[in-house]
Image (tube, rainbow over all chains, first blue to last red; front, side, top):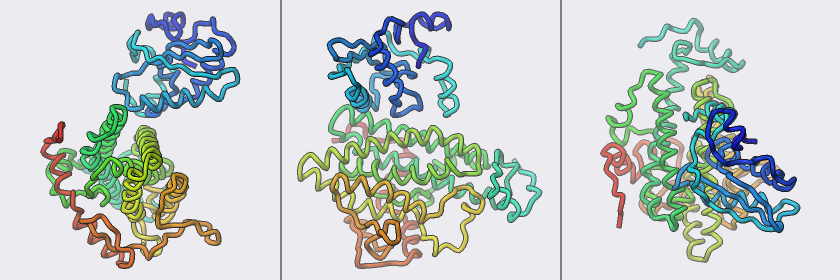
Length: 128
Length: 313
């Protein structure tokens, strides 16, 4: 999973970006994060979590609320990513609804990518 | 830049490659290897590049902003893939600018499918679904099996992006096929000419090829017929699932897909119709390819002039 939580990012010298899991999640929220980390970005060989596009996850009354951002405003896979998140989370035990909020604060930055993500991009020939 | 002659014969080199040898630079190549590699790289580069003008007009005709962003992104990717292949050709002594800007339209070596006019959005998404599937089949084999290491590494990014094109194409093919009878018919009409076009894309049947340097040098790993089967193996179940018709079926006894007409046949370029009752020879097919198709000059001019209409009426 991405190391993009605030405290870890600070340790790595990036940020500060208040995104990612912060250690106060319930078991179900942790499971949602883990499942989101299995969804590949349709265009880039990283998961949505590794791409630091998932800013926050909360589950209330069996509804998963996802704060999602995009590296660019005109994301070519905007619709696919919404479909993938809904499709993935709806099958989870304990989740009956999925609400996705597209957020632009903080603005996505490549500084949000951790070393593992950077290495995977480098290996696939994508320059940062 | 002149390379030192490789200290092995072509036959010895082929044997080393079949045993797993990888090639990193032009200095390690025999002349035969370099020639075969250049030939396939040029087809790949030209095909990627010419898909961009072919996809352009109908991308601006997409039915939603999301769809338009996806279509334009596909074009951007294809230009990037072309760039990668031309850059690899540069390592082999070719001049990128010269290849792109100083050739006549009929000197381009792109697949004949991208010499055709794409006339509506249904045709565009079928091109993404069927032609990009053909591209993935060909490049996927090279990615997995090629002896040319720089190409293998470059294809990691290309393969991932082509998967996105395919998903976009198939999502929209399914959507249009399920929407209403009119949009469904448009998808069927596109499949009617694009399916046989994709079958031809893979080239001469194996029993018509005397020798294949690209296989012998392990520049690619699978034969034309194997690749054609791979394409049908993936395209046909999808077309069946969305209820479209196509001229091929699975033969239980042969354990493979069989084409339902005497392959290859004549093509009416003006009406984009195959004349299934008019079989032709592969020499005729190659003559047709070499003469280039109806949109060849227009597409090459779009690239070479840099003039495109961004607000077509």
